[in-house]
Length: 433
Image (tube, rainbow, N blue to C red):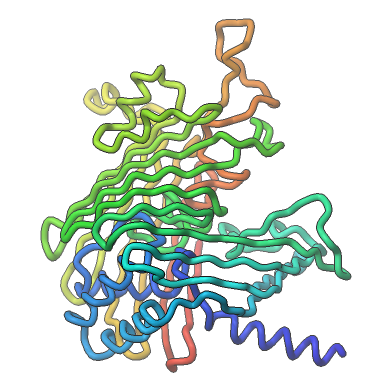
């Protein structure tokens, strides 16, 4: 019996990567789109992922028209999965494990998925199922520093236990209405923002799944997105589960030349109420929150890419919480500026074996992503920090950073490479310091 279980376990490991869905922003299709962006086969990519089938089909068509023979072959492979008869029901195994000196952690399960372009203006992508999670140690004790689990699951009080495992449900889904140029998406899924795959500083694809509502205009050389995420709040001391916490985000980017793209992003985190004024598309969120009484946590930032000769690409995001204009113009650097910086230089030849090589640097200044939730009902007029007050203003979701998984006052250097020794084997090697 143990040999049979071990064989099933190995089969799960081998086949887990063979099944993928566009609803997951870490899906392999986004890695190929990023590679083709760097090689110039795609004009521009919308800043917010995941993309609906309508957009993916358009982007893959650009690769078929502009890419080399290898890129066209890969694009046709993805197109065949997207435009064929909708995959109304499919079953696939899943397995994720970590081993460290502290012990081990694993979750194993079966996914049931529904995915496809139902109408030219309607697409769906959903995955649900159950996961058996080892309860020998909590995941945070075993995971490498700055690494989060690939799957989200709902932990409830009455989960079934099977030996050393706990059974928990897991569900993500998204529905898109519209065309490849103008579309609305809603779902419960992970979301990613910006030119960085993996753990990024604005909205990370590694952050837990959340309610997603987005409206996007995907032009030929410019993109505009209005995003609302329904988050989960906790108290100042990190306890409890509370709804009515939101991230509202607006982004606009423009590919001004074949060798460069620049964009602006603004966001606010607020809660305890839902304010319709933040849905207005053509206005500035920071201005709106000042008019509304400045009871939210606002951020602004710039992002962009430079496409250099010899298949080199430089990507950058600068995302700030507190920057004071008077301090900047008077050259006063003795201030508590709160910002994150993410920069990467990559070389992307896109060959048969060697796909991509990159060096990425991330810096998180002190106090970034944090924000006290003051009790406005305090007897004293002073802003009072109370441990049991629900914090709707810090940049977290369900107790985790919504952005990069680094704490304030930290930095990280990542070296990564992507190899494909054979069509059946992808190697993603990385080291971080």
